[in-house]
Length: 388
Image (cartoon, rainbow, N blue to C red; front, side, top):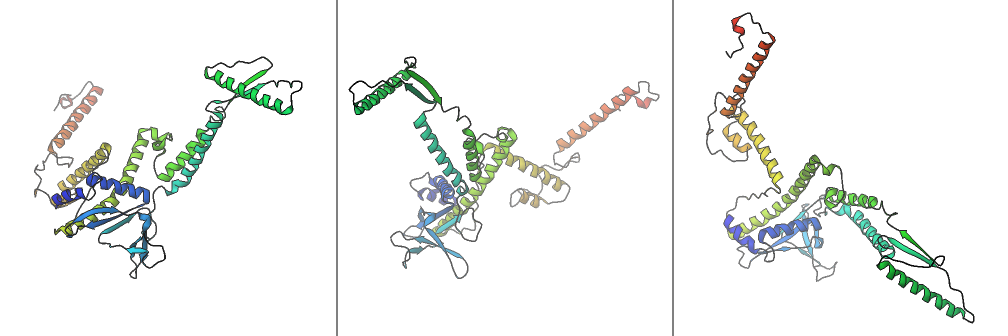
């Protein structure tokens, strides 16, 4: 059955990287639409699945049946709403819908970014304002230039005088732009005045409202602000980074749980169509990071120590030990390493018990030497500091 699933799952989607690509699309659909909405299409001979289709969750409507169970319907794109056949009843034997973040009995899922939409919209408005400021005033500021108005000549009409003034200002602007390109601007004393109006001085605290909005976006997305560029003091510490990593791993675990449900649905359907007698499927995701795997192994080590102590004290059996460690039955009816009488700490390791006993003996000798030094003139022979 494992070999069959490994071979056929590669053909369920021809334009992704096999089953791994399908899992990626499941996660993307879940995060974007708030639900995984997929349907398996059997082949013509009904001996397995031909492909898996992704159905847009926004085209799905649920209707409560007489028994109180919601049944999925898909909007028919070829018909108008309100007609008799505007929605198509879906077969729950081949269609699977898994919603996310819903607090009612309705199956509709809610995307995880819904609470961040308002802050994202505000962020878009702030970007437009920044762009407008840069286009009008530039990055550093703008140069204000003034010049004395030339007098009106004799016989010059008002219209010609206004045209000459506009032409003079245009030439002045062209000359100033050309002069600023090489860093030099020239003019006559008392005729020209130049002053740079800086915009950066008044915008030095512009990052404060931007960071506040970014933090609101991060809170809506349920992630740490440092991931999207917001500096935080706690995230810079090792303890804070560990807390954030654990939080992200737990969030990823929730997503993986939904994906596992969908995979088990299609694997079971495929085996049923192929004629296999499937009694159950268990799917597990591997660890996401090395630190995640280290934490799991540390927890496993602590669990094993506790179970060894309980077994050595006669509280649990070998079968209970195996089940608590995640195994159905033990490989051997009794431990391969016999319990040593020197196992003073109950861990099942005789070498550890011997080392502990030796350390206690050495400590007793050291304490005895310390007491003998405080009494340099012993009265009896039994107070000799030599080891006894």
